[in-house]
Amino acid sequence: MTDVLSDILDTVELKATFYFSTELHPPFGIAVPAYKRAARFHLIIRGECFVQLEDGQVVTAMPGDLVFVPNGQPHLLSSALSAECHPLNDVIAQARFEGQGPFVVGHGEPELACRMVCGHFDFAEGADHPLLSAVPQILHIAGADRMQYPLLDDILRLVSHQAFTAGAGAAASIGRLSEALFIEVMRTSVGELGGSNHIMAAVTDPHIGRALGLIHTEISRAWTVDSLACAVGMSRSRFAERFRELVGTTPMAYLAEWRLQRALNRLGRPGPSVKAIAGEVGFHSAAAFSRAFCDRFGKSPSAYRKGRLGD
Image (tube, rainbow, N blue to C red; front, side, top):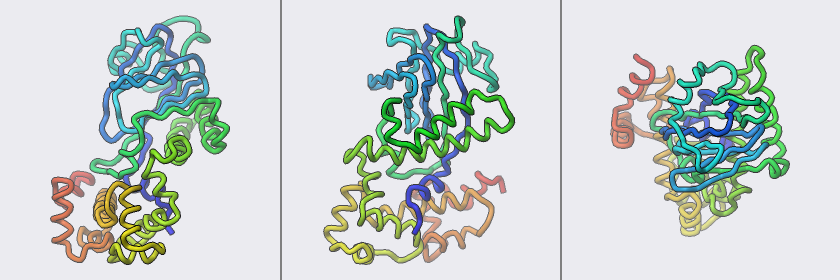
């Protein structure tokens, strides 16, 4: 059966688009802008950094800590909460940073600078899933807690090492490691957030997780609430109630949305015709598919494909 979490991240086209290592000399203050369809992380290697969201939430990040901002929220990075913060693009321009080597801000003894690895992920235009919106605005995994998550800890160690290595292929290696990092953060959020992260609990729930697996594996099948409930060994009413409680929507609404998300992904790649994709994701006619797609994304499947592929 399909790994639901992997299928979600493949379909929304998670991609690490850039990263940089920093040497930020106090006092420093950087305003990281909002960015749609994005996630960011900051891994502290040395020194201290305050990470503050617009709503006032503050994380004090120490060496070994990972701070994850999953939903493209604007935030401040500073050496002190009272520090004046300047737009990221202005700071990059002033530092004459061109994407190579460390991003150095200010002057001083190197050992006193705050060293971080910062990464940025993008998702495809229109890509969405309850998982992406259910994660809190900020996640903080302290260095002292990393040993609870051995695989995540190993990835963070490799990221730390590769980010300050100038060898051939270092950038590509960091990109792949960063994508693995995102996946592991999503997995560990179950333990970190417990019952508050319902969608991650749904993925691991023995009944609802299996139902999600069936939907993701056999997306074109004519599923009903009854057939899904029967397949996972629950009564119809209890299944529908539990699904909505954990996933935040009804089984049929989830199926309808995921069919469109899978179609969005397929249309962004060369291959089958629009009609063939409609059948792949469970639509009985290209016309019905086009109507549903246009209602959801504001353009026809053909127009979306043309915009993505330039055909």
